Length: 372
Image (cartoon, rainbow, N blue to C red; front, side, top):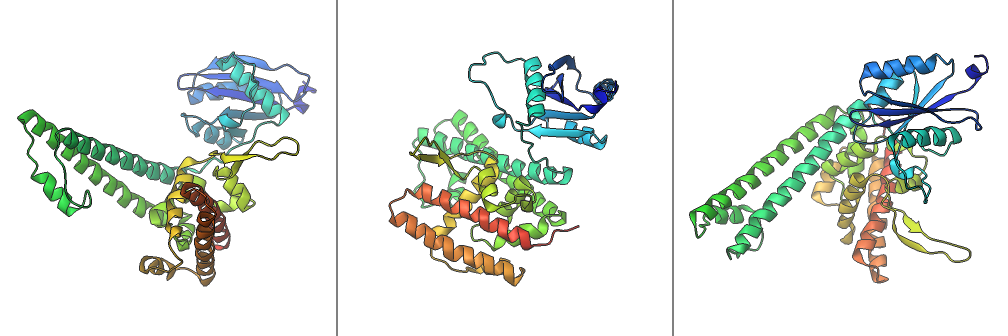
């Protein structure tokens, strides 16, 4: 007992909806990893496991993969004063020749790798931060549903050879034209009206979620940073909320390069010996924040200018934040022209701009005080 009390137990959890596979590895590298089988996912099952492991008299360190079950287990264990780590599945080392995968083996692998220090913990958002993130992702889902509904309606009209001759779709003139469309047969008219109704309902749903998002963010602890990074051209309120909801406090990154790597905006590399070979961006990390930055980067294809909308956003910000925003605009607009002049594809140029936008957002976040 005295010997075991000096060693830490690394507990691997393979978490699923209906069960959790458990294994632990003593701190001694030579000790074998022990599988405890599967337990239930309820809190009482977790409590029973904790009591069983604590009876061994050793400190406990829990680890499990991020997945669809969320972070409730992490929060439950940390509330009990226990150490818990959540790791990204894509960063777990795998043996190329290992073709056997079971819950038991996964739990044992997690415990073994945590003991050897080969796992990196991910950032776990607070409850309030996760709520804003869920709201922003719900808005993004509504946008995708609206896009699909519009595509189905336009595809249906194309099959009937009913064509809109106007210059732009989904404006007031287009909606008036849709209200006058008559299909060849009554069944087709019914399905046409259902498609139109689906577009209307999805549009209203998107508007509701955007209103809720804009209201909810006002009481958020990171709202000062949300306002400040709108000094960057191409980053309006919705884009700023997406960035902060997905990334959390940007000051947790030690450098802009670390943030760029987290966003998956750095080039991949396949180098060997004297030969250095870089490929496309890694696309690792958070895809939602990366997409928001890339969409905002398109604004820098025009010359540097403070528009009326940007000026209204800047008026509420400190002079040092305004200075960073203007410095970013001058640099990135020039950078866009230089890269396009060198013959780079426009998509590559926009991604390069988005990568530098992340660095400017990091610089702004470091000088803005956070709400208590």
